[in-house]
Image 1: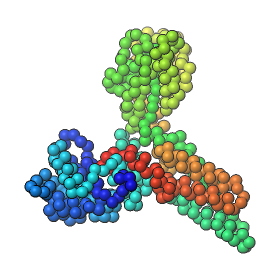
Image 2 (image 1 turned 135 degrees about the horizontal axis):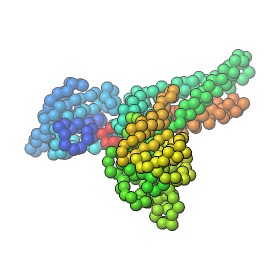
Image 3 (image 1 turned 45 degrees about the vertical axis):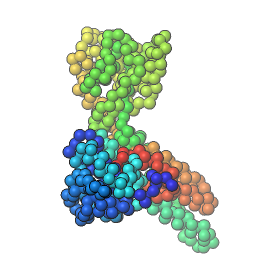
Image 4 (image 1 turned 90 degrees about the vertical axis):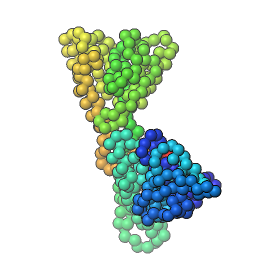
Length: 442
């Protein structure tokens, strides 16, 4: 039996980050929690009441490990749905190691990544969508990510999908009636209502999919690629937006050969800025590979910034761009050049700072637009999107079929697709994959 799937063992893990701190929290969960607390603390605190206790390792020579704040959570009222406890320890590494050794000595084992949340799912405390929201909440870098993850944790997506599942159950019940009683005088509107409901469900799900990936983009963060000719100022702009010297800047063209990535926050959205090799014709094999990679990054990015030197006439890169940015405005830019390029709204100078604040504002607005919520709770993972797409396909097939038995089978398959999303059916093979992405202690 896979130890990760066993709920008969008692597990523990540090719930706070390692490193220098005043307090460290050790979590315990499983059937032996109460007996371990009795050995560790002598007397168990009242349920859900924080109490100071001395922690002991009992043996030939009893050893005092720490004086800690102890909280006991009984059974179904805990996060995992099992007897659980928290030990608020002094955060010295020696204290943490000694308490961990004692817990192993008393019969517990270290938890694996995501094992606490997996037990919460298996014990019906959360569904699979809510569990994924918890993981996203722990990983949230910005307030926008926090709000989206918290909404999913509270069941926003689950409510939508459960509503669809209920409608499918009702439709399937009517469909079964048409199959079981074909010769009965059932009202004509039964089948008409059934078809209308299937059509409405199908349209709702298609609308849900048609969200431009906004929830997924916010969860993972956006990618903004910086493209342009050599010496157009790409690396200088990257350093300015990152507020540090992330890329080497010299007068020599072609300094950047490979992509340089920097994580920033624009419009409360995490954005990876990617500085790329300058686009030009070259015989240099290394530089040519860098240009090839730059073009690929530009095709896959959520937003592309194309930089051109405002002081010289240069051809524009043959790539699709979201923003054209004319750089080096501090140099002598002729009136003719400005007039000829008056459709280029963004003129900047990294040297003097001219236009930079406006550029940051524009990029922040773009990041907000790409991740802004529109309508119902957004999809946040590829797994969700694939599940709804599968459900839509079954509903399309159900609409096409005239035979009641075949239509009923497609409706059942659609229900199974929804059930796998929330974890009510057929997800055993997914659990280890999903929960192994969580941090230890969650």
